[in-house]
Length: 136
Image (cartoon, rainbow, N blue to C red; front, top):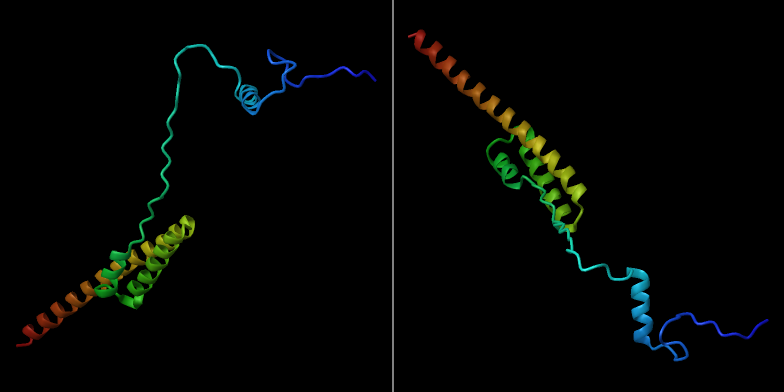
């Protein structure tokens, strides 16, 4: 076995024990690479939105609960909207989107059925009045 000394960091400071700053600088050069030429520096900026917007349809659900509530669809839609808002506050975006999608579907059905019921009532009232007037 030879007793020759091996330097881990060959360079101008051979024979002198390396300091922390020297080791850190050589580590940065080893990891990052030597500085490139003085050419133009290209950079890319990526904007990442930290909060994904998930509509919870709570106002629409409340409106349907108060005005268009056939088969309690408006109330059930309101419950799903509140669940969607809760999931959004916790940070569960996928769960919030799922509940919001269900609330939207229930709201659409509540509006459609509510309008059909109102239209049927109006037609029924008109037919009853026309038949009552024709018998006079």
